[in-house]
Length: 342
Image (cartoon, rainbow, N blue to C red; front, side, top):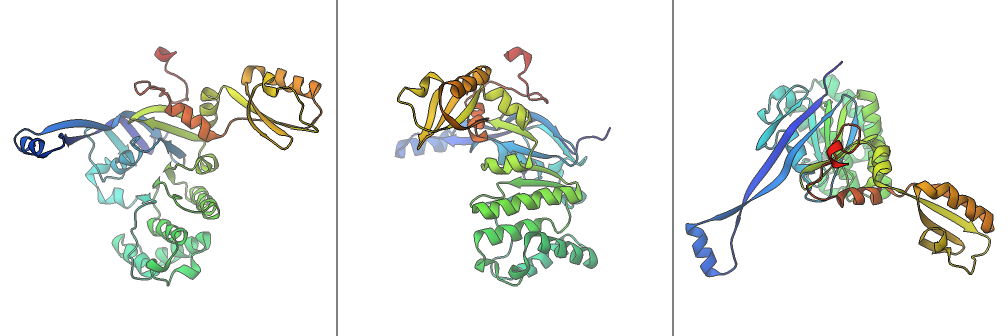
């Protein structure tokens, strides 16, 4: 059996930050005795990612996602623990490793602002020493997949955010990396452009078998691309498992949306918690265990035109995961609680 492409073991990153009270006297005292506090950005996480997987790496702002990706990309040294990507220890910055991975950050710009996009591509070709024929073939593929033709000869400063993001992603893939670390690649983009970027990532993964670790605050990205998710909060790993298992574990409710011929005068809260009611349509939140019973009662008691039963939105499920106590760890490879937490 092949070894995982990404292996992370007890990885930690601790920052020491200075603190002092307000005022001139406090400023003077800090010159003699500086007070510091430890910030545990990443606090002992362990996981692995197999070849060809697209894994969602989720957490609220400040959870430690970007810090983890920077360590795996070799930009930061960990305080403790170890990690291997493609067999390399990332922060040793081996040239062969750097040629086989890429980090795309939605809020960072690698293209040169005042020159055409194609010139930035040429610069990356020289940096990675890509053979001319391989470069030409890769550019043609990326231009076709991302519809970059009209953008190549425009200065980067003249591109819209969505156009620039497409070009940023293409520039990061010119050397055909085997591992992609994508940090909010669709941030700030409109819905249409988000869909195009998601489609491209899925197609690139299908064509090349590249391994992808993706962070995003857009749950549509996660649902479209990731069968497995890793959730961290306050630097601690909370969940590692299938997206469906996450929904099953943290969502004990179903949503029943029922369209009625005529809204009854009686209170529908007898069937479940009313979460939305609008022009003949009512949405109820009902415990999973009694969903079949409630559905039967609705059909028997009311004049129902249509009825659907759904899981709650993934955003709601993720919020419930984040609501776990900071010291609680739910980390197993199959998405179940550790036995000692049951």
